[in-house]
Length: 567
Ligand SMILES: *[C@@H]1O[C@H](CO)[C@@H](O)[C@H](O)[C@H]1NC(C)=O
Ligand SMILES: *[C@@H]1O[C@H](CO)[C@@H](O)[C@H](O)[C@H]1NC(C)=O
Ligand SMILES: *[C@@H]1O[C@H](CO)[C@@H](O)[C@H](O)[C@H]1NC(C)=O
Ligand SMILES: *[C@@H]1O[C@H](CO)[C@@H](O)[C@H](O)[C@H]1NC(C)=O
Ligand SMILES: *[C@@H]1O[C@H](CO)[C@@H](O)[C@H](O)[C@H]1NC(C)=O
Ligand SMILES: *[C@@H]1O[C@H](CO)[C@@H](O)[C@H](O)[C@H]1NC(C)=O
Ligand SMILES: *[C@@H]1O[C@H](CO)[C@@H](O)[C@H](O)[C@H]1NC(C)=O
Ligand SMILES: *[C@@H]1O[C@H](CO)[C@@H](O)[C@H](O)[C@H]1NC(C)=O
Image (cartoon, rainbow, N blue to C red):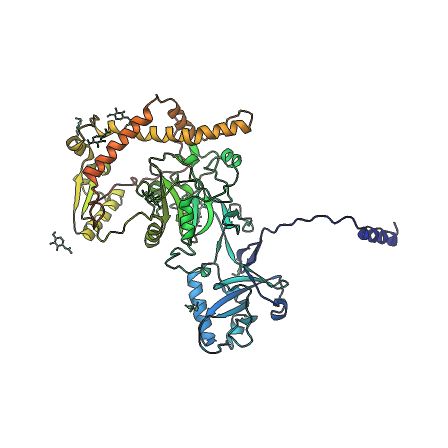
């Protein structure tokens, strides 16, 4: 074909106009690399700079990293800049010197007309432009004032975007990362660290947030176990069919809302073992892959059921908190196995509406942290019904039933878990100016059991109490409705259920009628007995009269590739 003819054909086609086609492009944000670090730029801007194209010479890229620096100084000079750099580098993992391409000085002082006088610092740090807020001579205002920290400026439009640093979820603790959807809910983060083969989590700059009495947790990052509902996201409970069946939630569980109201930043949903049942890595985690415990060689079981929250807290310095739950050890197990702080609070400490139940009589919400003081701050904010007490209890209860009598007769050998416990207990004794009181629960039961309790031993009383409650409750509240809903949507088929919950539900279905009531009665007898005879409450200064110690585990290894059901 002749070149002219081809040109004519293409030209001709290009000028044919058809009815306007509806192009519906929705931006999902951008991923970029700056100084070897991956960032996410959310789709919606947080402010804009009028006349950006005139004020900032269009640089090489469409997005320019810059820093908003508030100052009350009359002269913002090299020293002030270097002090800011030192402070921000220590405080924040998102900001870096790469954001010094430009700076916007935002004057928050009261006196006179401030000036920026950076001298040679501008060249030293490669600062391309310095803009100043109104108040400075010839200053410009941002459309919406911004807190300090790193931002991206789109020069063509003047739009300003926040910076999220992207991290790789190497330990596979997360289901996905999240970002706010601008409507009180959350979206799944669309970004991925280039080259990463696991989930990507995005965290906003810590510099955007300042804790206040109203928001004491502002800027602290939190991951949430995937049994808590979050507006805009599905709740999966560790089961793929469950995740697919039910739509995104329309409201956030009040327990999580309370943490968000306190300023916490949700960065992702973390994995739970299926329906919060106890699962071991190799035998049981069929629908999801079990998260990795970062301790040791990385192949210890992470414990369950709050496995994702526990392993994430242990593995990732960029995460401050993770919310889990504890019915029969689901916080305490992962906290111990992964070496972080974690708690089971008193039952009823926070509302568990919009949270998948295992057993409402026993379910509680706990939080993991690596920093004990931060952990206490979160607890004080979260557990609103708790009173602060002025003194520590003076009695340490040391149950021989749990520690074993050999612990007492022979000093624990160096390097054993018992020696570690003993060192801790000795420090606690010193701190409280007291010594441990050895208690045998079995013996105490014999001498103090309530008159109307027929159980000869605690073992008899509690034989199947826990097993009966969790299975019967979860069958009624979760399994039966789920299986019915799934069947209705799938021609009567059963959803896939992992072996652990399947076996437990099977056990529950085979129980005779009346076992729920019996289990509840036994639980109540035990609970009342503990309150009357073991941990006595009501002291106005110390809350309970004692601290009860028990070993979370024996400290032995538990490799994730060990088959335990192989017989
Ligand atoms: C980026 O990574 C490369 C290769 O690891 C290294 O040589 C370079 O110094 C890094 N650059 C920055 C800004 O960290
Ligand atoms: C002004 O900004 C500086 C630097 O962030 C901060 O330390 C100071 O508290 C701020 N002053 C006011 C009045 O907000
Ligand atoms: C877990 O995360 C830590 C910290 O990011 C990392 O050093 C370690 O290699 C990870 N473990 C595995 C098994 O990926
Ligand atoms: C505090 O306790 C009361 C009474 O038990 C309960 O109604 C309320 O929901 C609790 N508040 C919170 C925030 O848990
Ligand atoms: C520790 O207790 C003993 C005996 O009860 C008492 O004499 C002593 O003053 C206490 N010491 C402290 C530091 O409280
Ligand atoms: C408690 O009583 C039971 C049953 O009478 C008995 O078997 C057990 O040895 C007693 N335990 C202790 C520690 O006294
Ligand atoms: C046992 O007796 C106590 C005290 O009389 C009573 O409060 C409690 O409800 C009774 N418990 C059961 C399970 O009957
Ligand atoms: C309740 O306690 C009785 C002994 O008083 C025991 O025989 C029974 O097995 C217990 N039931 C459950 C569900 O634990």
